[in-house]
Amino acid sequence: MKRILKFSAAFTAFISYAGYAIAQGTAPEGGDPTPLHQQLKIQFIDGGPPFMTPIILCLVLGLAFCIERIIYLNLATTNINRLLTNVEEALDTGGVEAAKDVCRNTKGPVASIFYQGLDRYDEGLDLVEKSIVSYSSVQMGQLETNLSWIALFIALAPSLGFLGTVIGMVQAFDDIQKAGTMSPSVVAGGMKVALITTVTGLIVAIILQIFYNYVVSKIDSIVNSMEDSTISFVDILMKYNAKQK
Image: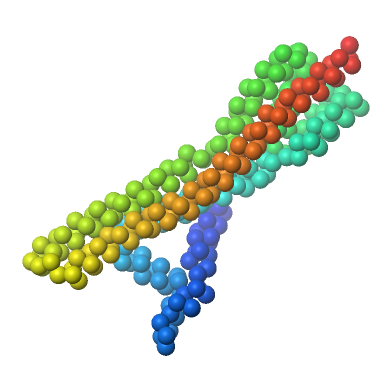
């Protein structure tokens, strides 16, 4: 988990540096270009570290969970057709134990489900089907691990931004009251500081939402493959059982 946190922090820093070339082209004519990471640093200070820090933490932690899920799901992806073929060939040549070895040496939730079904083969096909259904639910739960945390950070980032905006507005009105006048400089300064937190929170939520949707679509793809493969797996076991009789 520490490596993932470091990677997500590095990824966040990379986003900051990625716009350096853009900043080169947007500098005033005759002036020195301001790198994007310097601009972000200025905006961070203007928005107020007490309000901006929690939002940035939401980005770093949210990216950490997203990256962890992406790595896990990519490792969990299996060539289903090849696995089914290997299991069927192992059953024909070496029986149930050979098929177990194939599943044991294959990564992914589908292979684990097949192994649980083969482990209950001697107890009857009805129990095999029940075991497959039960263990499929367990595997689906593991695929969805940490999704709730990602959803939390997606909701929390803009909420923290709005909170910073409200507090900034209150401070702006306090400044107006102290100044005793509706000076544009006083109002504009307070409004700018207040709105920076909202913009940052929305940007963080958008970034995390993109990763979240990718993770959810990946899980749906794996679950659909899992359901289709278990049907084919049961058919293979039924054919093998008929041959044994």
